[in-house]
Image 1 (cartoon, rainbow, N blue to C red):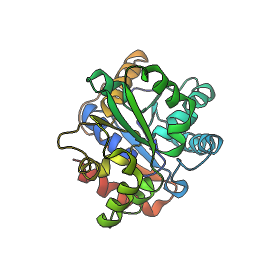
Image 2: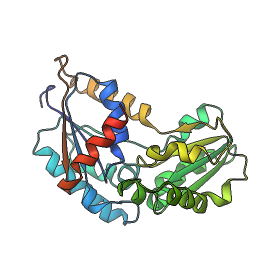
Image 3: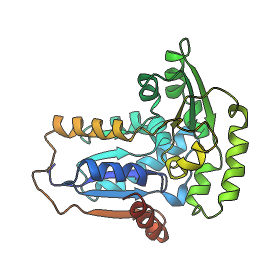
Length: 255
């Protein structure tokens, strides 16, 4: 494994581009390959086994591009597949993004709304996180079916988005929410619309810095940080090649 090989980043679709935008800033000398599994998005409505099979197929594709490490830029895939992927590929450093609940708690919040896919909020991994803090905090885990689909679809109808958000969050708009965790990498693309439903200044947590710090530790531990400087490149891949222009547009929007 060469330190000059690229880092693979993948998501069920376009959501992971928001994670990628953070990683390219944190690692300006590294090369990246992003894979969006748009043809099979969203993952959140699938079973854990289906998500694992999708993720394994993507990893096999990325390995043909000689990646030196993998970032699972999808909360659902991290929860449903990361442990099995680490067992399948013991020589491949794997980092996964997770809902930034601990980050919100460490910041002093006590009434925390966690938005995620149906699978993410119901899997044991997230439930165990909630159980750890539920005696001292109020944590509202909210499944948000349809929200990732809206973002995958191009985000062209803001009125439809606001109607959907009101439907998903109706039970929480009058509660004393003092922190919001976006537990799906798609959701930051509509962060402003989500924040607009809560008191001004309500902070939002994404988990990006956490995954960046973990990637730094993993690359250091395996002596895989590149020794080259400058000339960063991003290669775009997808299970639905017609999506690549949309990937680039979203990435440019985040720069």
